[in-house]
Picture 1 (spheres, rainbow, N blue to C red):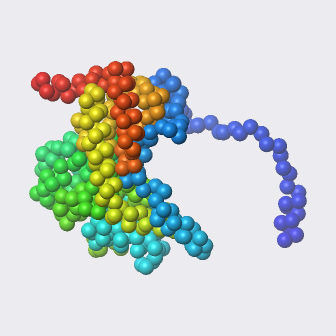
Picture 2 (cartoon, rainbow, N blue to C red):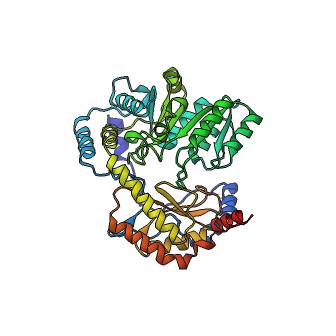
Picture 3 (cartoon, rainbow, N blue to C red):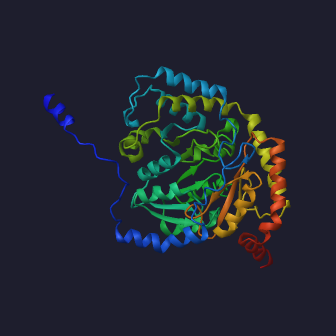
Length: 420
């Protein structure tokens, strides 16, 4: 103790100076200058495109994912508060240390039952769920067939597995069949509802192709869990396909409005998964108030038929109005609406026109989309009022002559296909 006290006493506190950093590796600097500098300065105007104006309290926010408007539900908030007050001795640790009977395990059981599968496993995020699952169920001998618009986390899972990924044309099961015929049995990966366009996967045919070629199939239900199917069980349940799909995954940051992900596995795979999935082994578990909130949210979602009806009604109404104003949104049909301006410069002009009139969407550009398919994504919710819907419709009609959506590349491509 005396030595420590002496060391502390003799410690010299130096004046705070401006921070300096060591030089970056030359190759990193080359990449910044060659692939990013022009984009940052000339196309983006030295501002991140995802950060436009700050939304005012009266703005219409179409840039979130809370499809059923459950945020702030009194039952969910109370469950979180109760957990914060009662879990003072909780140990933050990897999920692999969570025993059966823990709140985490009980929620996993409830989610598995909701999804109609034997086992469900929670992850820190939908991204971690996809990476952690694919890393285990595929390897360097497993060909993996992914829809070309599959979420980036699914592609990263293929990389983590050291597997070879084969992209098939979006929503084209016949192209999938040709690839599977050429490369052999493997893993098929699709989204039930695609996150950039709101397009619905032709799941019945995809499952049929997977079965015909001896493949397993993984369906990411991030944008249909909660919003589709009986009690919000998802699109696979709505179509009666759950028992034919090997793996379901979902982000719980969409309709569940939380911070977690989930994937399903058969009981026979659970122990192997726990022992080998890196995101589960090397990440901390969800916290008690998160688990409690998600458990309460599951109950709310089961009882939210009216909210689902409202969401789908809002979707039909706004899609009809947007299409009538001249926007090419035919690539999707669900609560996600892509305004695909094309170039990032044109997308930023669209974003600014909408935000200056109090409508806020989410900007998507590379790497979330291909380089020349930048878009403003509008996501609808059950909580939108009639006045808010009317405002959005009026704004989109007003800015259409300014941004000329009928001249966007996607509109020109569609016309060319019709004429050919």
